[in-house]
Length: 155
Image (cartoon, rainbow, N blue to C red; front, side, top):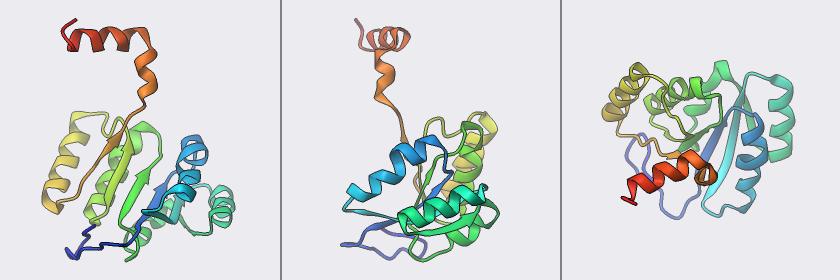
């Protein structure tokens, strides 16, 4: 994985910072690092000091206040960020990560407005960073999603 200065990091785990320590982070994201051979949890970022310190001890990583996000992103062992914040904050954190040359993994939506989308497009184009978004396949079971899927498939 290349980062910031373009160097390639083959045979090395991707170093992640997790931004936000709510339910999705605690129930799914953080525990998943124990099973990932190609990823390593490097740091946590949260505005909640009690939660961040407790989870940093549990997962044996560093912890940063959200005000110190830029310090976390500047670490040489941070290649990517997982944003686990409320939807309206996704773009704000994604822009900050991309400006730092850190790749972003984020639940959808990545942006909730056209302005946020445009800001993301500008910074990722300039920095050549990626912003993959994940989505939950559980929505397929919902009736409206099933109807939309049928329409898109031409059924």
